[in-house]
Image 1 (tube, rainbow, N blue to C red):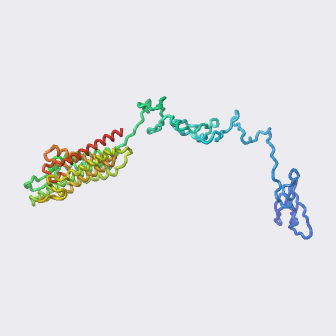
Image 2: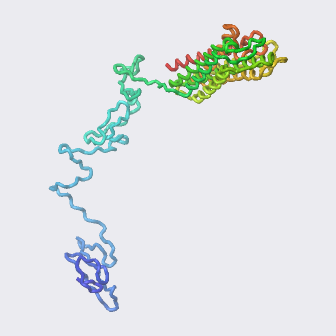
Image 3: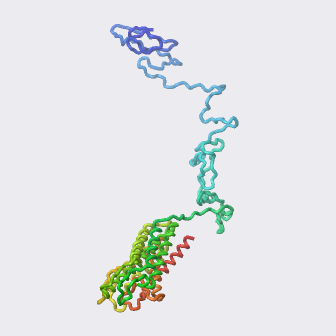
Length: 485
């Protein structure tokens, strides 16, 4: 064979000429051959290139037009059918496939029974509805049991046995029976082990440490001297202890210290009302301390007026009282950080509103002037007297802390607020009770005494306000316990 351009000899398997690089034109008709060139006058070498001679298609029609090279065949002949004797032939589309060697099996059609039939994969072993049995193990496909059921209706779902979870998944039977209603005496774990209910765990919290330090400081101040005035003058001076200023001071300090520590212990056990109780006890302790310190300053002022040369010494009990009051305020502020929601229903708002109104009455009661006294005697000395300014500050501090604990605690409508209101009212409640009933020789009431009072007893508004405050606190506590049950 030769190249039709340069005449160089080529082999049949070559596609390009090795000399001129021209593309070789072959035809397949049993063997490769070149069409003879048709040379004529005035024609160049390229025009004289031979054309490709294609074999005719069956039927006598050519596949390509010799002049234009366009495809002439528009349809192909139908393929021959499969050989019936052949064994390695794929089945036709839609024909059942026999893969088990026995009965012919047809794969299920996902849309044969309408949309929603193929609800989930058959390899998924997790139940969709309560009480449903799990499917085949994950990782395998059961060809003999394809899912055929529809999704359950609402009525079918309601009729399923109840599915409960108490610290773990447990399947209980249907207790409704034929009546369709759960009996009142139904016990879910009857016949089996009762589920374990894990309560809150106890752990030491900073609030407990602050409460213990405040209580220790208050207790120490009860047994040591508070001030020492020498030499003794016409007044009973010398070493003065806590009960020398009022005979109900010691028991008041003990009640407030115990309230504060018990509330802190409850908070360490996870009860949020305990944090409120500790905060209220701390506020009450701080209010009681400033009253005692105010009385101490009054006695020092009197001693200096009667005996200018007297030496006044503030003893260890005085500084223990100051430390107890400061720590009580820290307990209050630390407990306010825990004034969150405990995940239970709130308290009754009507009881909370009445408790807040009772607190306002209890705060305003000691400020009412009696026996033609002036209202400004609540913040200034009466004519002809010299009362230290600290005693007025002490009265307003105690009443202000009571107002904060009562109004904020009740209107918070939470168990923390209930503990805060009760804790803040315990100290003034005891002072009001002992002064009104004259349980000791010389007790004092909340904010010491009303301006212009002659007998030192609390005014009726104070007594009623404190009593209603504690009453509504007990009512709210009872309602909270009922809701908890």
